[in-house]
Length: 98
Image (tube, rainbow, N blue to C red; front, side):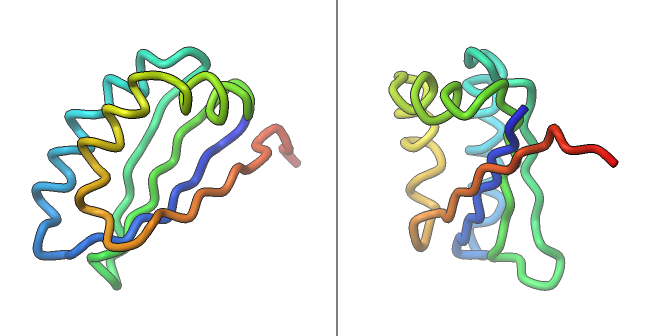
C-alpha cells in the first residue's frame, strides 16, 4: 500500500470554495482503479495549508493509471485553480507496522 501525501497551499479567503471543489472531486478518487480512500486535512495553525492523503494499491496506480486518466484532468480542473503554488507530492510506504 502507498499513501500519497500532497502538501497544498491555497488562498485562505477561498477556503470554502476549495473544500467544495475537493468534495466534488472525491468520487474521482473513490472510483479510480487501485484507490482505497482519500482525506483532506487543514492545518489549524495556518488555514492556507492542506494535506491531501490518498491511499493507493501501488505507486503505479497513482503515477501511471490515475495520472494518465481523464479523472486526473478533472481533479486538476476542479482543485488546481485554488493552488497558489504547485503542490508538493510524496509517496509513503505504509506497509511498515511495528
